[in-house]
Image 1 (cartoon, rainbow, N blue to C red):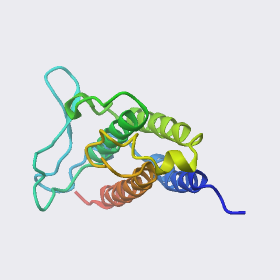
Image 2: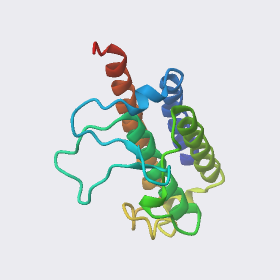
Image 3: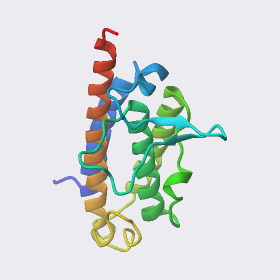
Length: 176
């Protein structure tokens, strides 16, 4: 018997998440806020005490290096937005999605988003996954079937986790 596509998607998500948990064990605030290169995008407290992410529209080419804090914000941003569009009633503006202010809080935030996303996927049928109805308002996936967006979530998470792991290793190996 072949596995349902939703089972494949959640297994991929779980596998990627297990690698993320490996990196989260050693993650601390100093590593999150370390800037690996001049001009690096990061997260910074604003005048109200919220942690906001550096951002430019359109994105520069090449894109700047990013801190782990920025990468964790970025995961939270696109996951919040994707979940809200696909399973909610619309997403907050990018500026309203702020970084929680520390490694532990960011990890908890992202774990919650993963749990919400996974729970939303589990009851879906193949017909639900083939539908474009849930992706109708999604800025980067409008017109795509939900299965394609869910596959992108897994891929984007894997890419960001790999970047976090590499940046964390560079932070640990620095000699300054």
